[in-house]
Figure 1 (cartoon, rainbow, N blue to C red):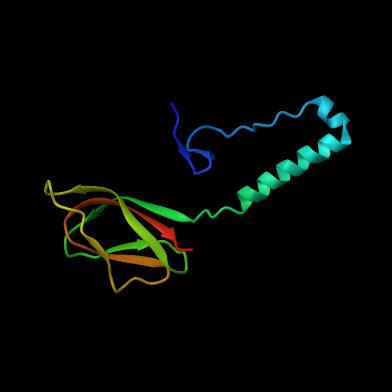
Figure 2: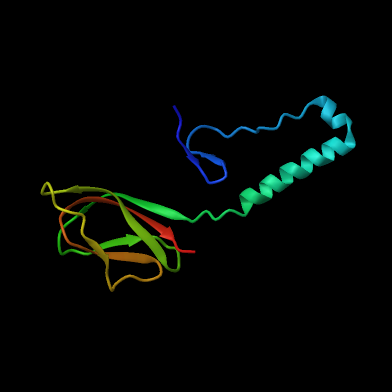
Amino acid sequence: MSAAIVRRGGTIDRLDGRAASDVNITAKDVEDPERLARLVQEQARRVSDIDGRWRPERVDHEDRAVVSGTPLRLEHGFGGRVRWWIVDWQPTTPGDAALFERASGTDTNTLVLNVGNSGTVSVRVERAG
């Protein structure tokens, strides 16, 4: 079993395994200059499409112990606005919610979060577009 994201229009982005080309170029193909030119142009178009996709930089701060009332400082070094979200939460007290909000100490390279409950948290920080 493998993991993939199926996008609108049927495009599939694999999340595991090695990518493989769906184009098989044979020795016969390279003997025909026009056919070879078409194949190279199509591959150049595909590479251009891939290079043009938005791939935001991100950093995961894994398994950080937090204490209610103590700000959590997360260095990211992106030099600008970021988006962030909780990707995993294990409260010290079972049933406590993950309560976090951006704090006033946040700057362009560090995200500071006010912590509402104690536990262990993983936070993903992503450069904003």
